[in-house]
Length: 288
Image (cartoon, rainbow, N blue to C red):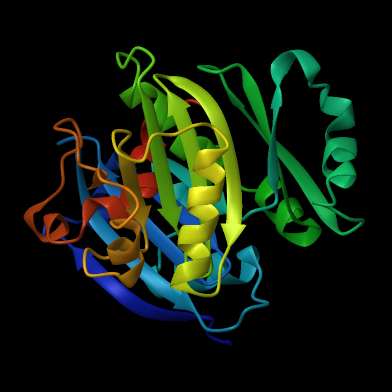
């Protein structure tokens, strides 16, 4: 069997027990260059496993990657109490519910050049803001996901991110906040006023200067005050990053996303920066 996964981060608590798999919820995050998963033990309301793999073959499909993962662990997704699979790509758009018709979801995506004849279209509904997130994946991957057992839920990573940010900011009145989810060659930008979603988009970059230019340009369009509005980072970024260093010249209040008390991690998982795994830790709380 061809191998597509190369282990990068492995955190497995000693309490993990295959015999108790029915007590666990697994969350899998599939991106173009990475595959991450967490395991949540419902009996103690704690995350007990976090692993990340690099995908060494860029054209590897979701089916191939998940099949290899199941074979490595000798556990099928259907054995877990619940499984959540997150699609982490940039092929998505948000449409207010009063403008959305499911029969026209393909038309929305084609109009924005986000899909083609080889695409499979899926949707999430984010009730807090009454919008639909329409997203595309490869048709063969879509057929595979559509035929997974009933205990498996499919969602887009951006739906989880936005739903979680809204829930965390329900009591913020109309204070503005900026959130940046950093990836290897692009970043995801969210601007919120209190719990109201104002802006969401992706920006590709090659250099640190590109990153900061796009960030300043986008935030200036919404009259964000760089002196007072907090800029929160999550995703693939360290506190020694050159991106962070340059951003600090233009934004006074820079923060990392902090773990809320209700998210419990084992001691081993606590050693991993929470902001880097924000989405995968928050997925099981989202109703999409």
